[in-house]
Image (cartoon, rainbow, N blue to C red; front, side, top):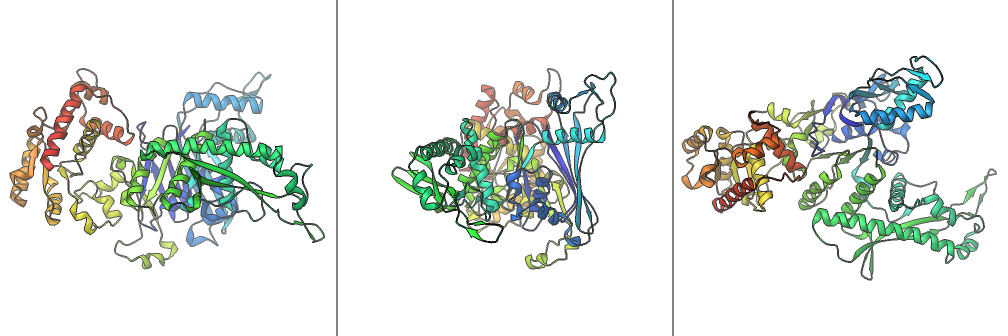
Length: 631
């Protein structure tokens, strides 16, 4: 089953919000863009609450229990008196195979026979939290389908489900939905120690990393568990006792050797998985570096007896440490650079999590990932997202950094903002506004652009939303100005397919709107280079720039001047390629919008389109001519 969108109501500062995932089978990565305090984190927390996984649930906001989280979910201005419902509704698609698998499990467990029933391909599931006077009362889970009729296996007639049977069926539906894994920024602070034993003062962060270590053990495939393969030996009945008795009776024995072998296999799994992915994402060999995991012991907590007396412990604690081995040198992960720690943790979380959820998809939520890293590191992180969000998984991330906005995914980007905030208000003013005025909203980027037609650059709404202002260094960077986003995506694909770097590309909203981008280049003292289509629109746009901005013949060119077979950018593709990419049959008209959308999807998913040799030849000729034109 796959989730295709959410509705959220009455969750903290969200009165009503609607989020839909436009899924074309590729690029299952979605961006939430907004300033600090715009509501991005609140929206992610709402999505996480729908179907949270156990370990990331306990680190959300650092609260200790689900009960505390529920108390924080109510509208912020009504913490003490909210009476009503918080609702998170997921929109779901299910295949015939999904339903068959679910019904088989239900029939086996409930010892019932389901009547042959056409269960829907699309439906909604709602999680409803009921409150009275600020206090949580109950949660209900509603599946919006017509329930199939059932009968006992030996009965003759089918009947409607009883309430308990309906509740059980809904539970199976819920368990078949993707689980939601939420990763707040602070959990990327890799701990120096991860305790494997349960401790009264254990943190939520330690519990999270302990579960992560179990994922690593599961990946090995030998059935190792923390409890059976490690702790049962550390706490073996024959050796438990006071520290001075236990330590020599365990350390150096065959039991400890067995524990160390389990730890060593885990270290090898991490080295293979994380560093191989590191090579793939960053294109850099890590050499002879490897991950070393060692286990250490310390005196356990004193035992409090019923008479109030604390006795010396007879069970002791075990913890592990992750270190990086480079030749003969060992370095603790927490001593490495911030960038290394962040990416090491990120790859640990995602790679082993995907292995754990073999059958159940995961919706990954990242809150402002890598926001405190260098711009180059942020852009490298973006490159890794498509490989993590392979079907059936999805990935949603929030950001207030324009370096974390991938132009190829703008069709799957959303603007998050507070409808009641004023654009000219200060950070301090926003921080002290009454909670009752907060009204978080989310709008698809395409809709946002449509509502702001005066913004001529396709990327300008993103820049305006993030209040991006160019630095003094930005004035040295120019690029090729093209008529629209179709030209942008086609040229990006051509550059990738031919390995010819044509530099930055600035798309306008048509040939008549290129003046603003030309003016910016003029104002910054940059070289102006404009590429027009060889059609009427291009000719009109060229004449307009000549009249309004005195563009010279050295500052513009046309597609046909660079590649004789091109009139518009769609001509870059042969007719067979155009039909294959759009699904058009022989004799039917080729939809240019569908063609450019397909190109955009392929770029976002880093997909190989297997283009005709003639298409590649046209791309190579065009890119080589552009390089000569812009230099």
